[in-house]
Picture 1 (tube, rainbow over the protein chains, first blue to last red):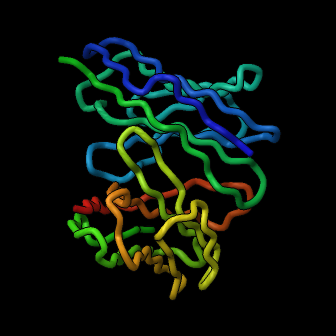
Picture 2: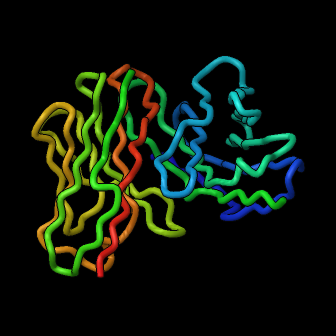
Length: 114
Length: 114
């Protein structure tokens, strides 16, 4: 079985400051990793994903995440946040190879302060 | 392109009343379908998933049930709602590509049980 830990339930940060949202996972098999974003009263949208290859993955709006197998982490970073980045962010993991369920973390609320 | 619909968007129901939430997917065939509940501070809880018509797996014992009468239709039901059933219900689908389980979410239904 897999598990995901998002240690920070809320992260306040000033506009244009950098941010890191932490995600650690546990799994006995190789995995795929995802970050989803949820804006208020909306469904989740995929932000970025790691399937294989380069351990650094990027989104179109400036976020990036790095897969670190030795530390079992997949932290999400952005060098300069905007007000529009205020949302809840979910880290998720699924075993690679074949159909499997996805396990989500409890989410981290990013609040960007003007 | 694929789209996923959920209705209603919001619902207020008295305790003990029945429930029916509907989810439909367009633009794909034979998807895996999921129902999640999101309660404040508790992240996403997988309630049911389905790999085909009439095939339902329950993750959490409760007074909810799910059905899949058609390939791209997924229904969440209850005969008698409880206060604890309040929450944000999300439907999601994923493709049947082996080794990849990226999920796509609907807009959600906000259920308030009074």
